[in-house]
Image 1: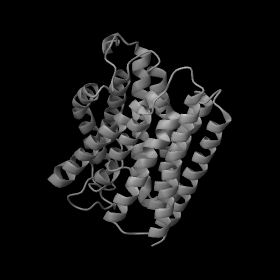
Image 2: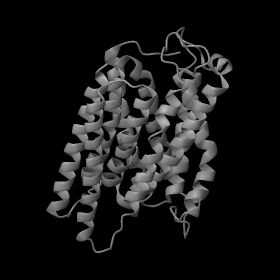
Image 3: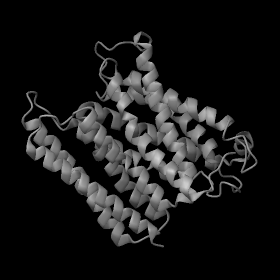
Image 4: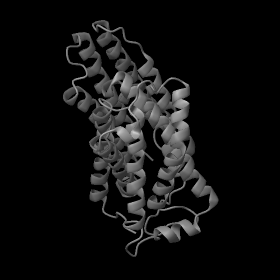
Length: 334
């Protein structure tokens, strides 16, 4: 299988993750202007599964390093397989709630709120699993990220004060719920993956096998997840365009969004062992800043907002970046 052993290339792959994970939501914004969110997300899932399948039988099976996909699957323990599947299920729930939050509040608010909480929870979970790094710096960094979430909420509130339509905080709460769930997905799926890509341990999975199992869990759980979202009134079912009647262009955008996210995921899984946990973690979480920039400058989500809202957005950005820097420094310390 294809593996990365060059530290420079590993860092570049982590940058790719940041760009991909910070940009896929643009597809959601484009599609949901004319089609239901459920249509976008269904195509998004197809994109993830499709690329994961291609990767498993190409990069995951060619070459002399590591184990090929089929050999890897045959030797995997039930525990590793179930962990990869569980990671996909948890991700699907959390990420779906985040997309609902984006629909309700916009990328600029929902992404830092949802992924910020996910980052804070991930810090705690990862530290409990492997107590490495400075707990003081981790705590201050986590608190800074939580402050960024608070500033995001204040920015949204200030924006809505001058809005013709009376807004509510539903999108923020849904994004927070998504972050609460998504904070656990990466530690679950990474627990199933070998840390030695060139000489993988017996019973564990290579990144390609884990990614395919992860994506299949998303695909299988998606209809049930949609039902649950409708049951709780988070997906609008009134006068919605059926899946088959949506234009091909919208379907292709959804597929491309899934492909983009999947490129980011496999880049992180391949790059993190040689880039180092601190660098890979910090760069991947920098995707939130990319998302906010898209929301502000491409979609103009805060165009015409009062100066107070802009000040809160600046404070949010500074707090989030400061939190990431502190977390990277903390995780760099052994």
